[in-house]
Image (tube, rainbow, N blue to C red):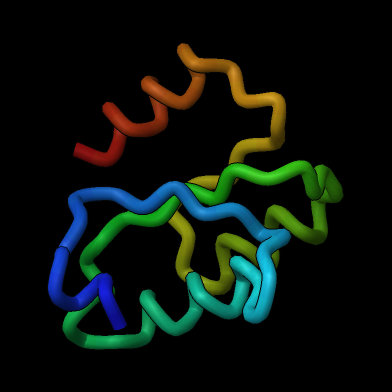
Length: 81
């Protein structure tokens, strides 16, 4: 996993992606002892409350619906630190 080599300070994750979806990738990152401390904010067009709850249960620290308000994103990032 490239994430283990790069160790980003933050991940902005989409849900709709080719191959694995963002929920699956978020869960894998959050459960791995080497990467679980990397905060993940899901940024997606999936706007159902059940999607938000599921994303947070997978290990995301927050969940934003597209189109993303830049100020809201910056506030969420600031709250992590």
